[in-house]
Length: 328
Image 1 (cartoon, rainbow, N blue to C red):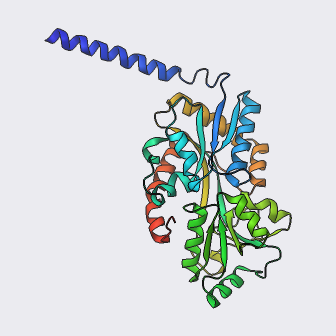
Image 2 (image 1 turned 180 degrees about the vertical axis):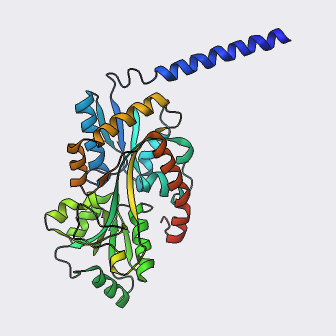
Image 3 (image 1 turned 30 degrees about the horizontal axis):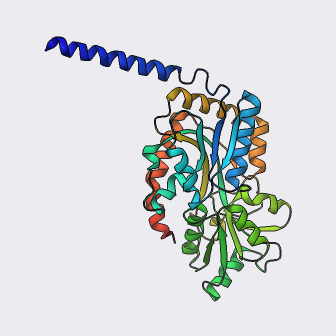
């Protein structure tokens, strides 16, 4: 009996040692000549797409890797997350997630086949962004207070477009309604760009969006920014007041972007991706590219991003409940 136990222990030790060795060597030649697919869970042209392509392009250029951005839009970004959550943990399928889909989506979309805290591996924090409330250049609304006054006079008449139900943008809109004591009508789209186009054409009164998705049209004078929802002003739009400055003290809603892989992604691969992304975020050219899109670049270690993500995920349930947001 003792001999059998010792034999089993020896086999377990051998298997454990072999597994550890494989994990140690997993990132040695990664990714080699094989392309890495970076899933973008929203359509082309939005903030997530723009930031994803900046990172994918620079990883390809500076490391001689092949990183391909692959748009997989729908269901508030959760479809793209689902693809990576069920992928093999090889490092060749990663996703640019954000607060919308990897944090809020879980509490808004019932029956998701994955739990972000269990089925995803945080790799690298990339940037964060305020949410902006804007309107077209031809709109009658010159300030956010104009919107509030009109909404109080005729509840539900004013419409606002967002990149979809369950996104942090949607939550920002709902929380703004509550803080301002008004009723607006939410019009969800499949991404920021369709919502932007309908705002420009006057099909919806307001756009609630990440700054990266809207800043091009703001700079072109086609979109009038009314306020940002973060605690402090955006460094890309320093003249635009915060919602808090306009009377709703303590109002603070923003979104963030970060890379994730499937669960059980080997630590050496996670470390390698984190190191290379952080190198990019330390370069002025990349910082300027992200800032030009209205986002704020911000690097984190693997450990710090993991803690940040899990805390945000835990806190999100209360935020969703407070907003009263629902998925139609």
